[in-house]
Length: 242
Image (cartoon, rainbow, N blue to C red; front, top):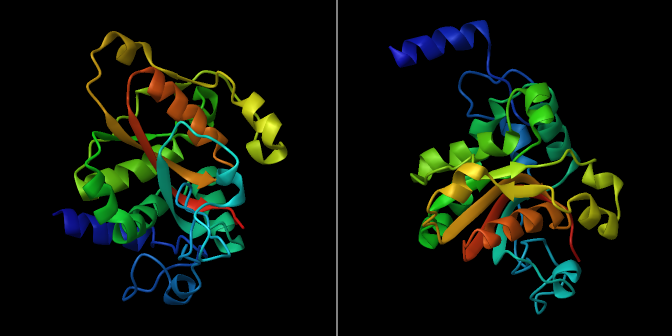
């Protein structure tokens, strides 16, 4: 019955490629074949901390990570933040293309499923959005991605542990110092989890984009204050390193 319902739904609302927005042919997968071939996956050499591509094989860390200390341990990114992915994520976040999350989750698990499973995390934690943005969009894009990953790997997704306590301005408009100030006190553990006995020791933060790491780091700081000892992250896209 579920398969029949899905076929009827697809006839009314044909699935679209999450990379170009065109209707996908029936014999293709979740994305157009041509678009899929153009995806820029992060390859080695990459930064051991944030996963950004780096130019030298002998280097262990990108420039940013070599001069900063973070509250998180390390993380992985799937794709370079190319023009193709900028368009895709803009549609996903701002134009109600929530269904793109299925493709993102499938690709993330195909690439990093074993690595995440080997970490044996207690939960995936989506980076929260402010409640006003949630009302505008109708969903938290990081939670959509986290749920797709979690159900494929059988990892619990806890989307009410972290809350966003203030509405920040877009990080891309700020320099490094401004980004840190913008996120000062922006995340906190919810009252529900402050009252509960939290037995989680290792978690994975999930978000769509990593640039300087300020957002992930602010979330990790709040989680460390709750007593969670190891924090890793997984994101779809990351800016260039070197």
